Length: 277
Ligand SMILES: [Zn+2]
Ligand SMILES: [Zn+2]
Image (cartoon, rainbow, N blue to C red):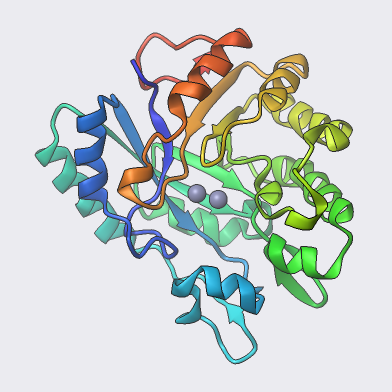
């Protein structure tokens, strides 16, 4: 049986205008997924976008100011939770888990606490999307424009232990290699081994805090991250497709499950549990 997809976005996420909770649930039933967690974005970092980033993401164009500053819209907690209830009624055989994906939670503790107080969220993912740039913040594409690629990755990975130490609201660290999604093509393929020490420091901090590493399957998952996670003391993993469209639900899960099993992790007692060693 496939594991839970623990990282999915629907139309309630500000960057998923083509998402659909209902169609994602229908897709989950179709492919035999036992459970899905709708972890909608909760972002408070105001960031500057670069023009070519906007070309890839038309939804951002509507949000920018003349200075290309993006202020992520708030999550409509009540609307989201009502939609979850409608889907639970409509798909009784599917376990639907509530959740949020919180960007840079260590920089916005009060705003994050207010969201968590507004609803029942079963699963909270912690994410690092933005990093300081000039006098503001930027996602990796803006970082790679101004800094040497290796420096961008090292800065990103160095921030992760601060995020982990600075916030206890999340149980799962999402996409630890998020920065690598934007690694410049002209540099050749991203090689995690070039940053093994930095990855290990972040993984150890996460393991020491007793939290869970997400195996993000938006791209083909990286076996070395799971190996290093285990070696640094990590006990549990979750799987997350980071789907922003129903058809991307659980993508690459078969490959990810085989890889994670090969590294000694096994399903928990229930299909919606995290996997443990
Ligand atoms: Zn994310
Ligand atoms: Zn996400």
